[in-house]
Image 1 (cartoon, rainbow, N blue to C red):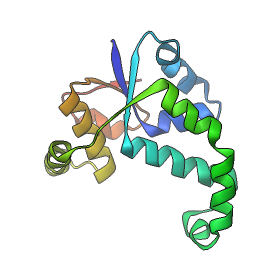
Image 2: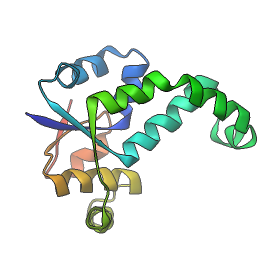
Image 3: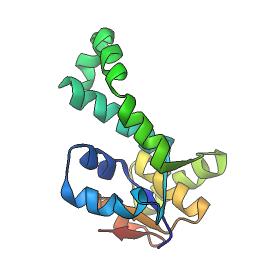
Length: 144
């Protein structure tokens, strides 16, 4: 395993101090394995981090832009972490088309379909995730 795709749930659990997420990410953080994400994972991690930092639900955040601004200011470390340790793969038009096929064939929800399609398009065969749904994708090795 020389490269892996990292799902947002692993990164969020890492931020929360989860030891199983820390063990999963250790080879990536040490530079032994290349870690990949895409814009879906980036967006999910940022959004969930804002919710965790503020303790507010999405509908509450929409009504309080000042809260979002303050949370964004405190997220510098989180954003640097994403940029330092993970390579972001582009979700181009071919990935988007493939994602629709993944939804049709394997019944994944849109964001997970884009993740699986990104892996397929770029030849990343292993995904670090706590989401059991990815086990339906035959070209992905799901870890753990």
